[in-house]
Image (cartoon, rainbow, N blue to C red; front, side, top):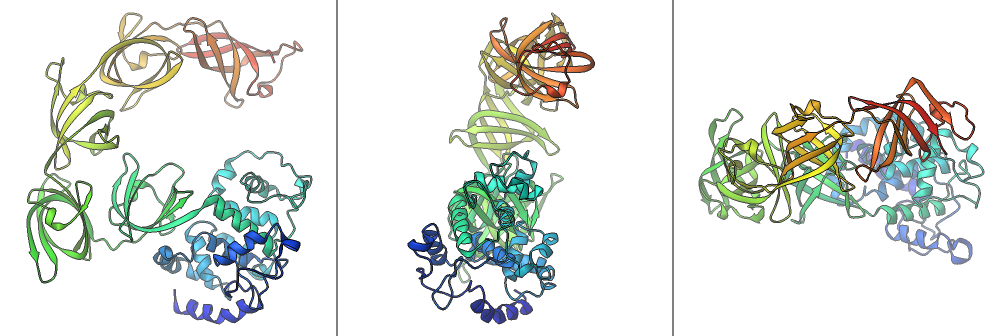
Amino acid sequence: MKIKKAISLVTAAATLCASMAFTTVSAAKFGDVTEQNYSWAVEAVDSMAEEKIILGYEDGTFRPAKTVTKLESLVLAARILGVNNSANKELINVFDEKYSEDIEKYDLAYGEEELVYLLGKKVISTSELADYVGNSNASQGLKRYELAVLLTKAMGAEETVKKNLASVLDYADESSIPSFAKKYVEYVTEQGLMQGMSATEFSPNTEVTRAQMAVVLYKLKNNAEFENISAIVTNVDPLIGVIKLKGKDDQQYGYTVKDDVVLRFEGEDIKIDDVSIGYECVITTKKSSLFSIDFITPDVEESFRGSISSIKNNSKTGTSTIKFNKFLDNGEKETVEYTTSESVLVTYEGEKSTVASLKTGDYAEVTLKKGKITLISAKPKTETVKGTVKEIYTSDLGVYIKITNTDDEVVSYTAANEVTVSKSGTTDPTLSDVRAGDSVSMTLEYGYITKIIATSKTSNTNGFIEEINISSSPSVKIKLNGESKTYPLASNAVITVNGAAGTIYDLRLSTTAKITLESDTIVKIDTSPVETITQITGTVDLVNSSYGLVQITYYDAATTQNITQSVFVGKSTKIINNSTGKEVALKTITSGMSITAIGSVKSGVFEATTLIVLG
């Protein structure tokens, strides 16, 4: 915290005691919040006071009917999100350097630390500050619809809420809710964070009281169960979206980073590809699931991979000097030497270890801070891994094989420039003969695949083509026995269409196919495309009027399967309502309707001449 801000916070103490009393320690029981007059708020008020989120006044009162100001609401939101958690100390220092100038222009008596925390966590933006704390706004009472917006932001749901289609709210005074805020009110109502002031009214412009705020904060805490953990990144695999970390308490953490998890670097959104070993961070969990990770500038000079060539231990300092053959991007090696820090973290084959476990020739991933080794992840030069191939794919860096190993973990490995492949039943096999679904035993040298022993199971089946993916890793979705599954298409797969040799570009949707699988990979596919479908009757799943598309699911007696068909509607297509016999517009068709489409299939595309709306 900067000096000016530190003085400001000290000066604010008297103000806080006299006005909002957020920092005055008091007993958790208040004489003016009892079962007789505030039965609905007693539990929440006591709980939030005990946890030092919203406290009472020096005279032992809580003053439940007093209005909560906009500035106070931000301070309280920051507290419930963990601003006072020791895990966030370094993170707040970084946020202070970044946002303190934005805050100082408002000359606030208190709350600067809480505001920079909310800015860094993207709960609010710098452009929103004036609405909360500009001019006289800071002392204005917070309205109920404004609280709905703030709660949605705190839950990290604002972007999702913005994308949702607004529905009709079950409040008689819905028209008095600002249009932009209706989605937020709907969200907090559905989440159980807020409810109407009566059975029929939300009362959006009523100002929030301290008792009401305590109840909302209590619900937010129990709904989200936010927890903050200070940690350092020990391993990251962007290919499978996994991050492993070590907490300040030496506890190990591992997470799969799903699409809804937010990753930020010093307040700015990043992707898992941008994360490196050694990054310091704060993990935030929501109901024990990963919610976000905030990374801050690590004091890392370099991270590299290499082999250990020598180790010298210094008994006086308790450190070690290690010489490495550092692997360079051009395939060459460079000899480097570094000394370990006193708090060096060592893992060997994924388990916590010591420098004494390292051996000459071991493969190592090394992180340096201020020229000293802080992290070594080591394993033997050569190792064997076994499992089932999940996926084979390529990138600018080479060929990758993702397997599910014998511990049921999904791990990706990079193939060396030269890989020896053995596969029964295959003459002179190469890497392109390894299939998804194969059982494999792979030899790794310095982390790269150098040898593969693969075993496939061959099977034949018939199905229905639902999707064709033409890419560097092509695949075909086939519906078999009522279930859809996507199969990789081998690069050397044999494709025939109506008995003639073809390519993936000759395959068509909505056609039956005979396929031969090696494990889970298509190595042969034979199709006989049906050129015309005269009529289908089914249920509407999706309508896009601007694109002229209707998606219909119908039962196909020939394949005894339910099939989803995309039907394209042109300007000449007649759309008739069967009940009235009159033509109607495409926009009148909605999901769930029963409909008959008449037309033809050309190159796998269903073009309708007539649509009949049945009901």
